[in-house]
Length: 370
Image (cartoon, rainbow, N blue to C red; front, side):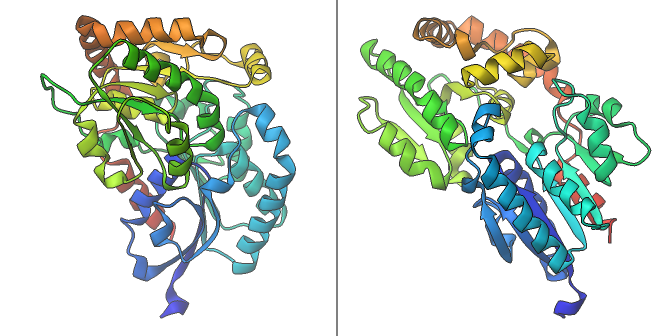
């Protein structure tokens, strides 16, 4: 029976990719496939041989990656050899465009000619547009989360498939008179958490001193729970830290507002109809480099798509205690401001979602390769 099974290699090195991965693999008939690769805890149950976990990828930002470059080169060499030796029928890369690009490039150089797809395009519309051409030279197909990305990948040697954004599956929370929590979303990487947590400390202290009557909810990942517990140890406000993904929907039902680390998380919060502010902090050198090259003014996707500030952002050098508290105070106190944000968010969400499940579209397309 094993002989007839098709072999798939998966490579996803961050949480948003692992969520996509788990949802796709859960829709495949696993009796027909052997699946190996790199993933996080959500996808692990579908994987036979796991070579690395997402917790092995801690860097974010140009400067941090430079310090880890030797480690990543070694990983790429090791994974390339595994893929060639096991002669996988299909390679699926999810998100992490820089890491995956270098892995795929080294595979092609080593004469690996089987099909390779990338799920989630690099943000060529924000910076380094030349990556679109580079990707088209080595990948067979690219699955796009946003319809507007199609125009960047119009090359004859790559197929571009619009699948839509995974927020398609997220339910809006019900509007109530009373909520229990303020959500803090500190990011899915260790160094993001280390960078941002002092700002969550500032807000926690403000909530306590101003006697604002809410508990705090922090959704996180199994490998980061201990770190988050440590960082919240001396807080005065009762804090619920959870890594049980299946319970998040239930907790979000009771979230009043959210302080969100920029990224996929801010889109998910927007889709849930939770008013939010976005915070983010890049290394100062990374910020300076990006300021020169980057073509967009915003960190948050809703703001990027709408070309205006719908969700308030306090990011990089603007992320000071004073700015942070000012925006937070306005968000928690002003219900008109909250309602206005939700109304505007819903006006633009349709530009981000497709009208069917991105996972179903992906599975159909993946099966067509065999």
